[in-house]
Image (tube, rainbow, N blue to C red):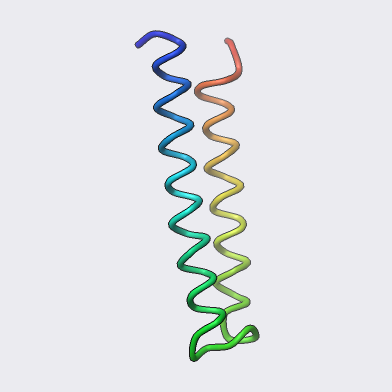
Length: 64
């Protein structure tokens, strides 16, 4: 794959993943669980999104 296609596809995929996980975390925290009940999932979601962004950077942005 070319560098440009890899960069665009990786950016779209990572953005959609983080958007989905962020929305899921927000709906859990604002729903029945409340902030304290949704806090563990929110922490996990932040860590997962951080790992996804790092993997995108490592695979697509950084030139080896």
